[in-house]
Image (cartoon, rainbow, N blue to C red; front, side, top):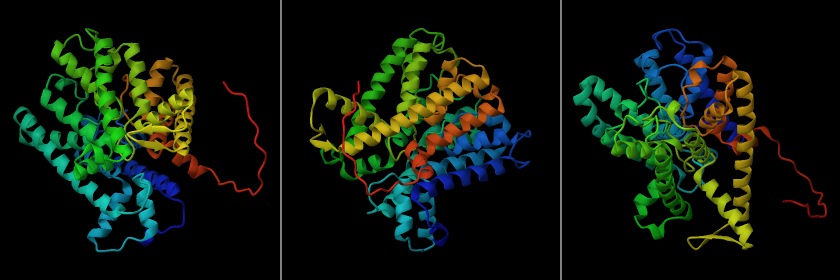
Length: 438
């Protein structure tokens, strides 16, 4: 793997790798046979970035604008990004019988957000097998629903496309109304949301559950992800249903279908970007609540974005620790380091600053309402893909700004900061002094 032995930090390598794939995808989508009608370079860049960052925002209709080749390019970008660039590279070299050196294991560790290099190659192999099996099962179930409805050829392709998009939390659909036409189909709703949840938990959590099969034996991270995901999904379903009960977005649905729509939006909002109701008809309180969910995002080492659910929890319990004047955060009989709390606060603060600045910039550029811009920017940052039908009408400047936020959300706030910043080293120590706060 000599081509990967360039002397650079793992964060910088991963940022450059994402840029390389975005450039490659943009060039492929600009090929004459990739689209039914010519698209601009900005639209190609926006769509490629949206696919590779697993966002799902679109400035053109995927099903009618792109040919089969163009759609397969998008699926390839989605699958490679979802499983991880380094995971794919390692698997290729394993099949070729090549040895994987320490430096490349460190890169793989960084891309999978792991704390050590021990067993990292085995983890990559397990992720690949798990992904293939899970997507295969979901594909077959969706085929049982869509083949009778659309025929063999279209039914199988629709199942294949949406399985990959849902498992990787990408939110791309071949239909202009996304999944609104299937709002009342329980099989489609359950399969898609199950794929979203599995992808959003993080591969390390799912594999640990499979191997240990006992909640008490799981790591603290896995316990937090499982309990918090369940709690947030249930709470979000209840809140969205309460806010939208008999609202315009769900007025055409029966009570059961309204519950199903609330559940679907609760699951998809934190990371995936699919929708079974018209986002433009949702009330402002619902949109603000969904912005919060999008900002929090999914789990670490998952296919989702945002600041990550565990980051939010560490911050939340850090505040509780301060208010109670406790020495440590203790969860499931495990304590969390103060350095982890500081890292969580850094991620949240950097993310919040970027979001606020870009919302203001987009509002000025597009002369659009702040709430509409807030939904668009947080959706891009969280790599979610939900929109109030605002993306297609943006100017090139607005599209480039949203493209940057998708890239920012994909690589992560701290990864980008570490890439741009230089380490400061000093041997001088100064006396400490308190600063008044609060």
